[in-house]
Image (cartoon, rainbow, N blue to C red; front, side, top):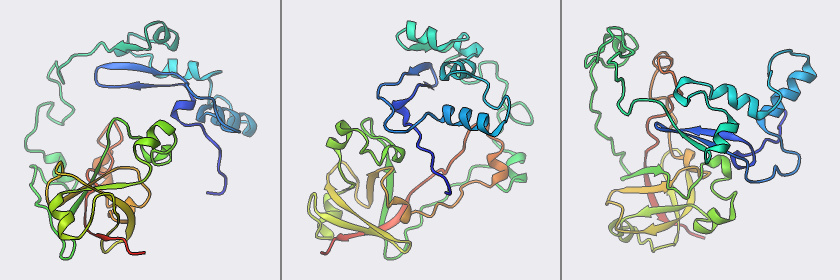
Length: 261
């Protein structure tokens, strides 16, 4: 990047979150550090200095969010409403998907066989693709989240001291059988690697993980050295979704060994 603008993180700005059933107000709980600004204020100030009119018409973050959540499903909620309602509101939607049985398909019906998918280079019927275990890399590497863990844009879970106490560095969960085979002790420093690259972590030996699979919290720097990052859908198929359709799987075939000094 040529210019880096210091933006606030989620906890340092006003925001909102919508689940399948509720709308939540995410009020600012931490002061914005240093010269950081909210993304909305950066856009507003830039448009003003560049002379771009009506690019960001709201005077405040509250006004912007009021526009975003002004929808029949929220009963036209506002930030002020949510603050008066314990910062949450039940959505006015059915608890069943497509209650009117109107589906966003060419036929308007549930399509088990999809000619549209076929025109986009996808199989018209779901196809099972067995996992391929690469020679020399017998462990299936997977990642995921827990309730105490933040994504990487919070400095790999290190932004808040309360979260950092739980996990100050990346730990790879391994079964006792896989650890013993590789002479890896619990909490020992390890190297995770495959033909793409490698990175260092510590072992967390537990019988909660099945043999042949290793697991780590997502967001740690180094994970992407092991995964391909290849698109799982063609761009033409992604454009069909009214929401962001990201990578479907981040797994990789890896091997683990004790980290040598």
